[in-house]
Length: 415
Image (cartoon, rainbow, N blue to C red; front, side, top):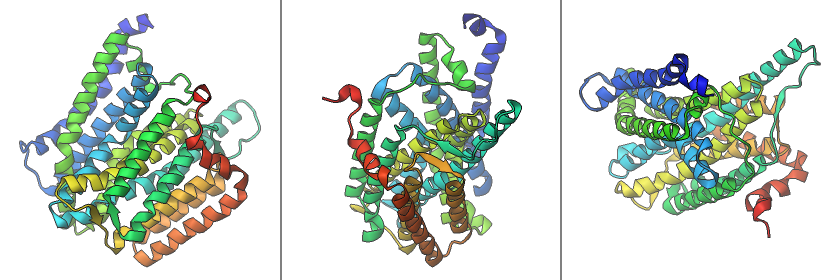
């Protein structure tokens, strides 16, 4: 290991990705600091690229941090790192909505888009790539053809159980037509409980890949200093670019004649989710699709608790009332997202994402994506619920265990 650390090739491979990301982030930072003056479309693009670049740096450093931080601290840090880019953008919209009524419609756009993108696109893609990877390996080893699907371990039931609780809480939103601060507080508390529960779960040694492995190969003190510098640099880039990115994205919709809500809902999550998707896909391509899906499942819990819960809190801090008012469209968006979450949980009650389950997730996501009609998407939401009921019946023997998982103490804490 030390020989590798001393080689020039190692240092080049270590620093090159971070230097490249920093270079990509510079134009966006210049736009954000008003050094570079551009029209809304290129300005939004450059700020978005800066956020993506910073998110990649956070992802690499966050993975390597598993080597140094144990238990709850590691879980908490990685959870925050995972959602930080998207968290900052979403919180900005909610904060701005507190004193600017025109921004209220965007407060929920990013979080609903990001959540549906994870399940409707991320899960099926990881399953598909994992299948091709397994089939390729089986073919080279002259083994029988592999069956399509990803099998998760029992610990995944904890994530599923928390998603059920979070979905029950978020159902209050479409029922009341508002995102109340009490709902937000409940979701944030649930997130804290999730971190505590996961911090005491049995954890294997981290399997670092690519750039994260190079960071992990540094001596302990050097690694920690390096990660702190990267965290501070990436966080600064994200914080500086969040507001200009959000504002220019809305203005870009005006310039291009494109629905601004859709731009906020889908383009912003694509920027913030890119590193996470990339990591999950890398694991799937290397035959570790269960780890890739596990990453996306954990991120889903983070987004559906901490991220969603932070919105009404930011709204109040920004000068708003105790609840973010929701119009018909936003109510429908939360209903659709909650329904998709419930279906995703039901499909994984058997701890396996098969071909039919992955196809159903993608097809329903694609149908709702291409058809923005509110009434049609309400029908899609009911389809999600109907499929969830069916698979809950199919896996009814696993329901009790899944619901109990969040409240079940790890063996080392059991009395």
